[in-house]
Amino acid sequence: MAAANRVLITGASGLLGKSLVKTFTGNGWQVVAHYFSKKGRDHRLSEWISGDLSTLEKTRDFINTHFDRIKDCRVLINNYGPMIYKDTGAVSSEDLISGFQQNLISANEITSSMIRSGRVHSVVNIGFEGAGEVKPYRTILPYAIAKSGLQLLTLSYGREFTGTRFYFVSPPSLEGGDYRKPSGDVVNPREIAAKIYGMVGNTEDV
Image 1 (cartoon, rainbow, N blue to C red):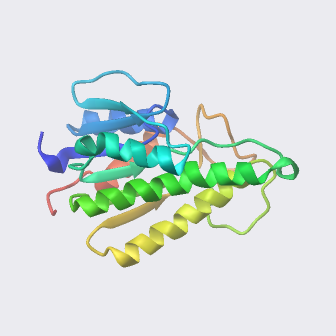
Image 2 (cartoon, rainbow, N blue to C red):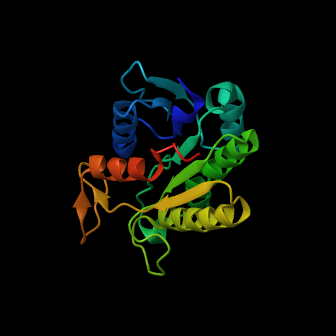
């Protein structure tokens, strides 16, 4: 498979991740699919690689271990970042650090390494509904702060690396997800996956 048709998707065994894998393989792309503990279904166009992104050291170990597999990917989708449900009053500094590591720092490390490889042309960072808004959060404060930080990181990368396209996608609540915003739209993960593919799936002009 040509390098232009390879994509790395982190958090590929999650709700949106599985839809992304299905969408890209369905369009003939070769998918390098990262998972932590739940490996997805094998497919002739998907290669599943395990990795723990819970600390900086483990994230760098994941990159070093699998670099030969991910270096040729022309598209990176940073979808990893589990939500932490906790009442705001009970949030600890450890919760905040964990939220930043798994949602922002891991994305930064992987993005940086792939940019250095010189082959990635599009990076998609997944946020959440309301990312970047100044508002109180009752239960997902670490996640919200980290995803808003990821939005700023995306803008920063976009200004510095003008030869690479950077996208920040903040989907509404997903059907079948553990977390649902009290009000607002609820969408099928396939719709978001199709939207993302529409952004980065055409490599003819690269």
